[in-house]
Length: 330
Image (tube, rainbow, N blue to C red):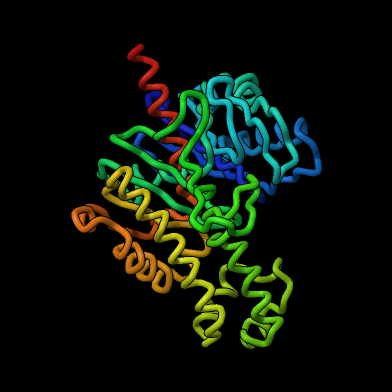
């Protein structure tokens, strides 16, 4: 039962396959949650109604009235207009120019803070997870692409009206294959989970990864993080080499980040890292140390994300609280 003297906050994670909302008290104790699948095929208007329905379900689960909520933060995929609280485009959902902030504020009446989904996840790790108490935290999340984010002295590192830290689109292999932004040899094109899966499928097809072939076949859509991890553990040397090569490219990005920002912590997260942290993180660390100036080799550490799927929703709620508190100072 809600306390009339308590402040409440909502975090929302709008992923490519799911919508997740959580209600928190002022100490970020979770009080209720709700989840639905995303359906990009249903169109933007129906999608916005689905988002609002998830929020209502979470409020009901927490037994909190919308009038008691001080703010909501939402982590969104794709490029954003932060001032207008609009998703410029969400390719995985087929949505463009989505007035997500306006839709939620009109429905519920509380203020909405919009953030990139990776930024929200990194902020969650900074506030509550692997980067708690650190001055500068950088997050790198290999998945279908490779997302990045940075929290510096308690604030997200962003442009004036957009997110940044698009580390996946930095070139690490001149002349390499093309990524989704038409960049040759970007980190995303050589080290994402999708790329590793594609190369592993070829290895399976050629007979170089017998366990993977038996487990998942050669269809890239079946080669998920768990299948890659199991393939390595079962002795598919070709897949292990593919993963190690990806780690070396990820180490290039680590070296670039350390030389630019000297972060206290670089947090690696996402399903691929979660599936085999003991394989990937030591290899990234080893390769990064070879590429970093000697004077900077001991200023940072590489760690695994702690919060899993909760990072984005907790970070979004914490961003909402930060935005409301800052607005009171203006």
